[in-house]
Image 1: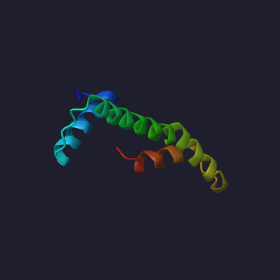
Image 2: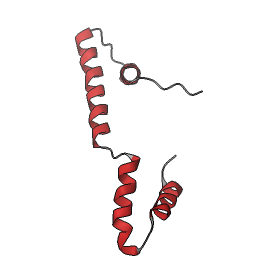
Image 3: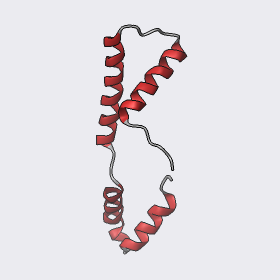
Image 4: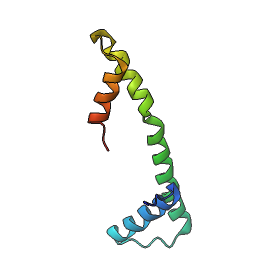
Length: 84
């Protein structure tokens, strides 16, 4: 089974990779915490801007109503082209 990391773990991993990539020593704990908090805030902001699958299906169905498309056809089309 695939293990998913928490947002806090992802922030810590990102910070560690960034430090290695840029050869930066973050001995200042306050600065490191700020970097992680910024990463978390950015991830939450992006999540709020995303549409759920149900919202996307509803939008697609509303837009296709003029073409006499039924909901099943929209769902089939969506499944065929969505990222997996």
